[in-house]
Image (cartoon, rainbow, N blue to C red; front, side):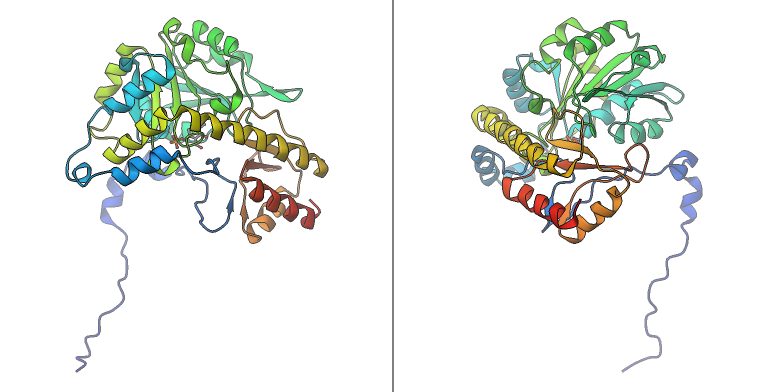
Length: 366
Ligand SMILES: Cc1ncc(COP(=O)(O)O)c(C=O)c1O
């Protein structure tokens, strides 16, 4: 029986609560992560194209019901210990985050009050700005200096009176690497704290990391991630390394249970399988070289890559090529903003994925 009272489709009304929102949050544009589309050749967010270590997959299968019923160990101690052993530091110099993005959030929350300033060379990872806006902090961009086949750190970076200076090394999106000596010099010149985000450093070869120099620089924070070379982007795990006193303070700021139990178990298994990790890195570097050799046929250029991606200078057709590749089921990264509008960032994929990219580009007469 119908009553004539058929339910109307839900009509959203503007929320009265919105007027209580922080005006700066209302005004800001949120961070736009790379598209997460399945069933395509995914070369847009710098994930590892091969699966994680078999030991990680075994740890995943072994994750017991108990690890769901109970809260996780709040400080991820087992991961801290495995990371300390793997990277030659002490466990009290390590903090584990829900991705290195979480480590960044913790650092920002701990160091920045409204009106404080951060500085970073530009262009770089966009989240550095978004998190600063959320803290009410001011952001200073100092342009990288393209030089030959690389991008140099701007000389004025140390002179910005910033509380935090953040350098992604290798940088995203350029994949360029700043030598350790220059970053150590920057750390000693700074009155503030230097955060070096080493999300891609494994692909840069030996001697590229600041971790061995951590003890010499009490104002240095180094970030690492499991999302790239460990092939664990979906598990959300990051590592922060700093002086024990800084780590102790940051512990007060993080969410109590910021890393779930399963991810903690996966992190330990990944760190303990050094051979597999080395192999993933080796395969990526060798495939990067093959991709670079093949891409030269298109007349594109890119800065020397120390990461698992290339920032190709494509010219005015960049957006068109990005869209054409997308309709062919191949996702690369393009930004509508300067100075990236004429460039495509391409993650190094599996050989067969890279071959698909190359033949699609040939068809496009890129
Ligand atoms: C420079 C840089 N830092 C951090 C991240 C995020 O890492 P995570 O997945 O550990 O949050 C990315 C991801 O693309 C990145 O490019």
